[in-house]
Amino acid sequence: MALLYTPGVAEPCREITLRREAVYEYTGKGNLVAVISDGTAVLGLGDIGPEAGLPVMEGKALLFKEFAGIDAVPLVLGTKDPAIIISTIKALAPSFGGINLEDISAPRCFEIEKALQEALDIPVFHDDQHGTAIVVLAALTNAAKKVGKEFSTLKTVVNGAGAAGTAITRLLLAAGLSDVTVCDREGILNAGDSKLNSAMAELASVTNPRGLSGDLATALAGADVFIGVSAPGALTGDHVKSMAPGAVIFAMANPDPEIRPAEAKAAGAALVATGRSDFPNQINNVLAFPGVFRGALAVRARRVTQPMKLAAARAIAALAGTGPEGPDAIVPSAFHRELVFQVALAVASAALADGVADRKLDRSLLVQTIQEGLIEAGAHRTLRTRHHLAQAGGASRRIQERIGEGLVRIGFLTQEQSDEILVLQASGDKRLFGEIALALGFLDFDTLIDYLRRPGGSA
Image (cartoon, rainbow, N blue to C red; front, side, top):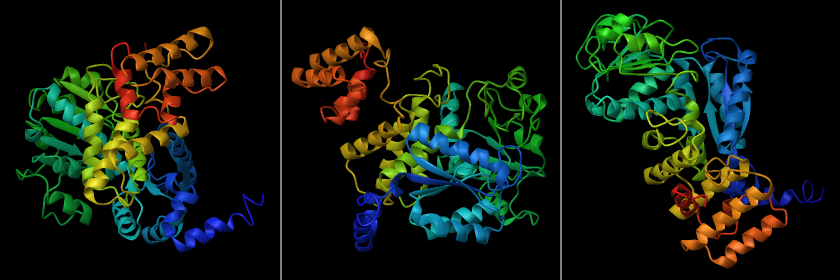
């Protein structure tokens, strides 16, 4: 007690008083995220209130821990007033390394996020907006290749001008698309329309370059891509038939998509993705937010910038078809062994390049920092590759020995280092061979992953 509480606990308090950044050394702040909602836009259920939204926030907190090794606290607020939400989160912020806003309705979410980003020196990330946008960009990058079209030339229609639709549109434009048309319930957004709220008016000013007017059907005629963040049944087979050959359909309304994949394919769609796990090519935020926060926290980024989001999208796109999802996928599985690590590394590197990182790390130390966060949480998917074939008995022992033999054979370890690891395992250390090698400093993370990727890397 003397060490854990008084008088011992006074020492870090004194140190933090003298040097505020020491809070990251002596407390859990640097690995702690708040998952915050007011319950006004929960999944496809709408404004169901904070109590009913709490299970979603709890689930999100568990995903942070499971996939990225990040501790997260679910918080629901009993107010819809943006000013109160902003002031409350500002008051809570000293306890956290980052803020994940969740299920807050538009246009209030834009005001809340912007005010917090300007006021706080930790990343504030509305996942409904930016997590969705990152995964959509990754998926569309690969979809363009699958249908043989140049990404920058895609005529794209985004149906839904709320939080997700707005962020998707802005990120696609930042990535190089020039012809994006946005629709809401009333039809195509047009600059100068006095009926639009300020957020929609701003969106209209940077979209619809051909000056289209009318409904969704008008926007879709000859379009290459439909991105739906709207409502079930919003897209029909006739809509799809009117699109350009090789049409790409992202029908992401949940739980029921804008059109069922079979109907879209029957109408001529070349490629269909949804937000559901029971259909191929699930576009899900869990592909993005664990890695985004892991990377941002690693370098103590003050915010999540557009280059960081673009880097995350590129990292996700590069992994599609290389894991359990199969070679025809346009996005990787959420359980891809390298997903969180690669996204985190890309995001952290972009934060350093963009000048928003308070912790300056070279690549080797950055890799080590991210890897340690993943290992510490039990998020070992990046490490538990082909060598994780058995966990008990002689078979497991022989697998570990063969890993050592292989690493010695190609010069990554000395025989003495391999023997030391095997002795530790024989004495009861339950960690895998690669984990011990990393912990002892015998290997760096990139070298281990390079070895395990090789044919026969488990041998």
